[in-house]
Length: 346
Image 1 (cartoon, rainbow, N blue to C red):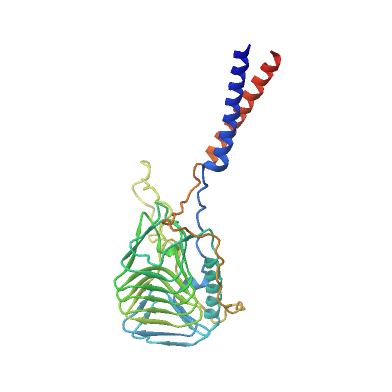
Image 2 (image 1 turned 60 degrees about the horizontal axis):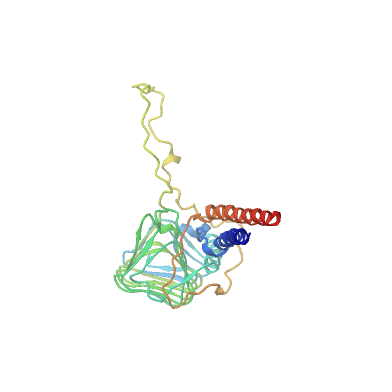
């Protein structure tokens, strides 16, 4: 009889241990994956390669793929020889609305959480999609942004002081990252070094300076100060396609000839890029409130002395593990109840 009692105790204990282990697995064993970040909405500010608060000045053969705007200032010198492919709006309603939209985007980017803290030097790093917070950021050499095969991957950099890149530094992409989904929120001013190659939308509270020969696949948007250019090229940040459409093959029964009434040209809507700048007008609707003062994000997560953990995207294994854990809990409870009843029956 004692042997039976020990057997029951052992089996009941085993069931209890299984239940506790399963519950621990659910609560502590796995960390949920970070949710994928959504892009920062620029609204009408997305129509501008350069947007300044006080003035824009240019030296040399600078080329802007999109528009140029200034508000509340009205000065834009050096065009020509600089070339603006989009529209120019100086101290008008369109520029005011763009500045208002820039302010909203700046505040949005500054408030994104959770974030990972990074050291000042970005050169030599490879980063996954996510939100990163830096004090005074600098880039020497190369920064690699790894989209992890997600064309919609978003990178947001919250910089609480200045952003300075060294001469000949660059930002490169791997695994499908898109320039249109990279955002630099700079609480002070940004300076791009001579012949550097930078990527993303720069949203600076004060000013932006692009030194001789610097290029930018993105936008230089300054809320309050000036944008200074010197023989630069700013291209429109194109978004990579989310999926690649499979090639289609005409059915075997398709007639070899095409009726004469079939239009020979492709509809214009099929060839119009999604990112074509909207046509501006000084008669735009009532402007939004002017830009507020600087917004300093409240830290909610900081890194320790160890290297920063890179956030991941995607649903992860949590749903499947949760279901497994509940099954194990139920099984453990059933074992406990069964052998306790049998013990009482003895």
